[in-house]
Length: 267
Image (cartoon, rainbow, N blue to C red; front, side, top):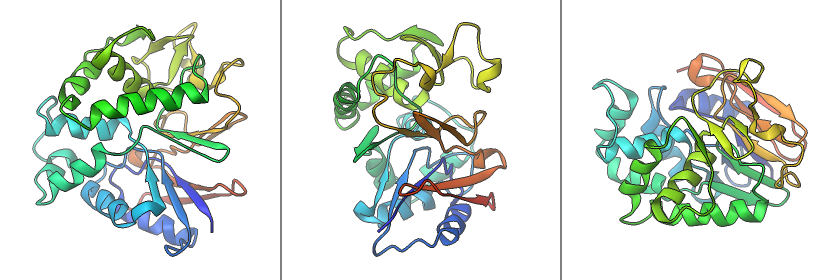
């Protein structure tokens, strides 16, 4: 049995199926991890979620910022053009089922020596901290606090400082935003105003995984989210977002040996 980790799919269902064939997926024994952002940009977001749902426990996916955006649109907190992939998904007959399944996905997955999150973690968080904080925020996404929590996550400024003392929904919103949106930071100060490559990032800020004293560093982190960074292997973290949504490739990595598999965008 092998485990394969796949980067940001963004509704590119045809590309996903081609990638599964590329590495010879065996549904009866292989496991698939998805780094989040199943939806948006590509034309078949609903089919990506349907496929993931149909695979049962063999597929593990964490929430990405575009998945959160879909939930926000469904709640009327954000708007999309009529012909956008998000609006198309919301018109599907089984949209409520797709949304309910998505809202119940975790923000973080830890298994064996590996940790998977969509965007990243703060250096001040240990693995135990991250697991605890993720569970805390997930509870807010799974009950009547969902709408208020997502609204608060969108009300955060472009630059803000993580404060472990924040209560309730605001704290949950900050946790969600770190795990689904972080790229550049300066200690506990985050900068959401930049999405380009690290070398041209804002002065004084570093990629979240570059802090030599990161408390979580005893486990390699698998993540996506950062198309401008692209496929990137760092001693402590591996980015698997190879820009499929932008005309690049969809990438999978076999956990056992780190072998990479690619498929050019077909959608």
